[in-house]
Image 1 (cartoon, rainbow, N blue to C red):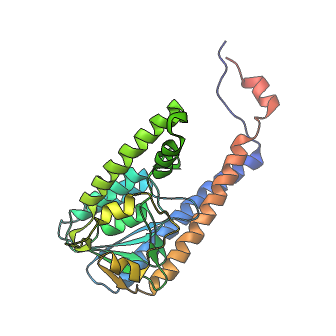
Image 2: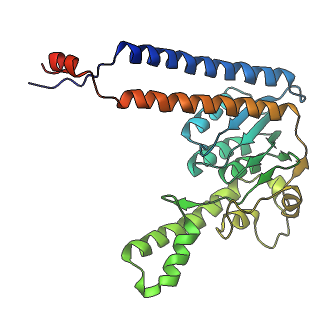
Image 3: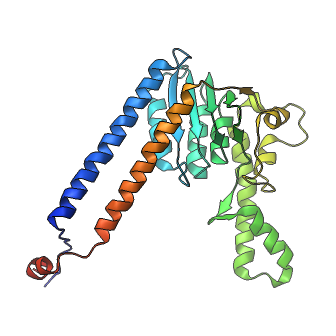
Length: 278
């Protein structure tokens, strides 16, 4: 006798799940409409506008990369592209994929009304020019190993010396290699417009050496000092645009938490008893 993997919900739960699904679809349709509105009102005619916007602790992921690369694949190589960034960071792999797609294009620009940190900074630097809002910032590019800053693992192993556990020594070696490899990768993905010819230390190494994290906000003056091709000011419409998307993301997150709560509920015991075996 095999137990069926079936869950049974009350009529109220079924109605809620249906309503939640419809609401989720409605929010995403609103987002598509909002993007089309921005594209129509964008003060830089003839440019394709793309957006990478996150709320809270969410960040760049594989879906972001696939979505953006799908759009870019449908454009001509010389079509100008503007990328709106509002993110605390995310997956290094996703950022690398996006940056690699952007750096191979001509006439690209990044717009950062508030912040594009870590992986977001990498994406911005793949564009020919970066436009920062008055209070906006970039940051160094953090490299983590299983959630721990790579530089911290190296320092911990160094301080522990012979007392370091085998696990820590192995993690430190992985972290050291990641710091080196990612610095080389980032260097290849920074647009030449952002590289000073006579810089004492390469921008990629400066941003990835792990000696500073998100706490170091690279604002306009600091970005200029680093040789980044940055301009001050972004279109005013971007602030409302990002506010709209953040509100939508909060609604989606709340819906997802409610849906998960319903799914965690126990099956209806009388129905499971009647139909749970075959």
